[in-house]
Image (cartoon, rainbow, N blue to C red):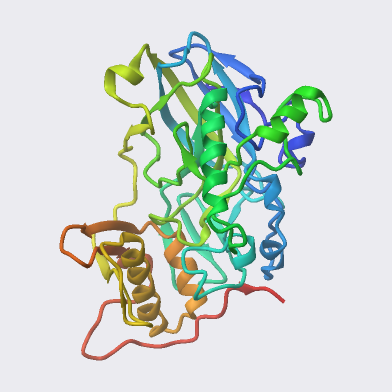
Length: 417
């Protein structure tokens, strides 16, 4: 039986666990538990906001979420013998929602997809959908359905949105320097260009709040929002069961942490909170390649072998976008971000013809097992991106036909009051 090395009681906040986790990246956060190369073990996780989101029909909780607390990470797990310059081999053996529990915390039989308001981070289409939205999903084994998005049912590619190793003091300093420099280019921007260290609601594992060690972590610790050289919040849906990830080691013991578990997600997680978010468990196996960073040239980001467990969708509706803003007739040079945004907007407009609101379509496109691709990146001036939407997730025929789309009432997602 796989040993549970980090336990979570879903009835309590992360700060109130017997061994608390953390919500900042810093090399001085103490190891919570130690394992050996070759070990297999289970880590339990809180939902990434610490269960601030409820199973209800209002998006007010998404609007009012306190992002200073995020993300809730379980760990750090120290790997004996790991040294800077090694590669940590991380095998994802299994993961899922909270086993055998129903309750008020995400992962206890349900999950959610959210859209943040522009002033709270926004999403990929925040210029078109600036307000907070939400859909609740009921989890049925490997499938999910939503009362807020009728007509869709899909099998998720369960995965961790966030896991990584602790940064060294030098690497942490480089993160903070470059992100502060980016913020300085447009300091009043909403949403901001990046999130600098912030002491408010910092959580530093077993360090006592108010102690000099805690204050140092709170003042210097990097926010967990982006992916970086240590892995972190990469939101790669193909980090599924069976994946093997090679993660750079920057500190003694590697200090592996994990959180932000997803039941399902589309490539890009375009609503920002776009996966089906949940608490739950993840089973890891770990090993080491000594000196692997230099030997394999893996010095800026992890590399991985995708898992072989995924839904068997074989037919897709593919939406194309190029690097043109059609609203203003502005051409952008080889801009894949603009091209993918246009592909998303084209898909939204298409799904609206079947009775979904634009908001509902946006939530579907963030959470379903959709494939996003850079399809052309050389034909000046237009980059071309595509969004592959599985037709099998709908309980109606979504393909074009001579009869035209059948538009029916499809309810509404949760909105803010």
